[in-house]
Length: 412
Image (cartoon, rainbow, N blue to C red; front, side):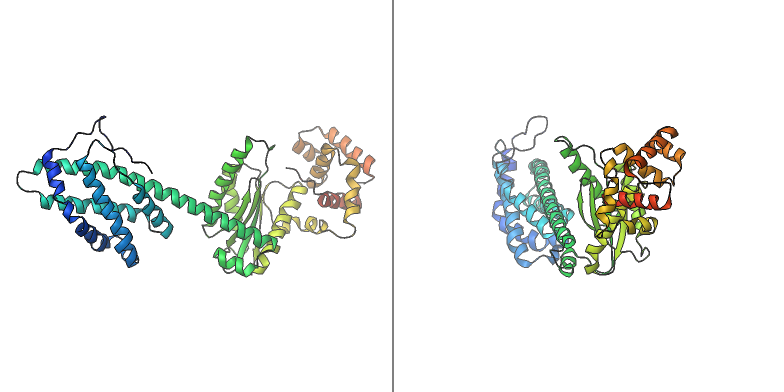
């Protein structure tokens, strides 16, 4: 990494006086002593520092301290030069982020080092060198600002990279858990999950996909992920895309059916995704139950969409008959084909769905679709004419509903 410029004030950085340079030079012989004192004594007061391995304190941290001391002394000799190479500070900051040292502890270690160096300069100063000492302290604090900035920037960049890597690893584990390519027990162990879980399926409608929308999609996924983390806690793991996905989270002891968690999540998601968010949650008693729970939650949302149910939290009990009718067997294809004559008429399919959802209330259907009631009547008559289904009869009503569910003609 190239040298970085010395921070300036008002466009200029005044040269240090010979007296200030001479005072600093007297500390050069104490570099190793000061490094040992900081690494083994001064830093011990910092939270968590004492838990670090001895080789980290005696080798890595001591070397970083020596580098900092020599960098300061070199800059004192040449104030018009470059600030020096900060690559070691950046490298150590990345290592501390990888090891999990809190940022506040890392920054406090640098500030503590500055204080110890100030003490050394103060101890070396004699009567009459007060002005030289003030020059050095001012110079020291200006340089410290640049170092702290480099350290914090590198630490946060590394932490963000590690978080993204960990998130992607979790996504891969969830994907393999749900598709059956990873044993559930092993997936739970690697994901840090245990005990009964709540498996949630989210659905968020997307507009037309374009090249420009790719950035919007990524931003939306990040926003949804943030909401999921805040609503369900950081223990939740997820596999999300622009149109939704799955979330697995430990089941709360006071919310055994997951209804409260789903409602809280839905309320938060509506604030960023609008009112068209749909979700369903199914509990899984063991890791082996998770894939089936995910499929069930997905089917509940699919059935609710196909039935024209309003967006929100969907529960199995609310779509129990429709869910049963949507199961596939040897008769499924023939039932689904009953609506083939109107398959290329989306306005007729939507009218049929709304009419069934509103329990054959033509005025309610008309209000929902923004149509005149006579238009609804005309469309229903056309459906009967083309398909032969008498929607007004119990049998025709059941067949039409089953055909809708088996076709999967759900609105976006």
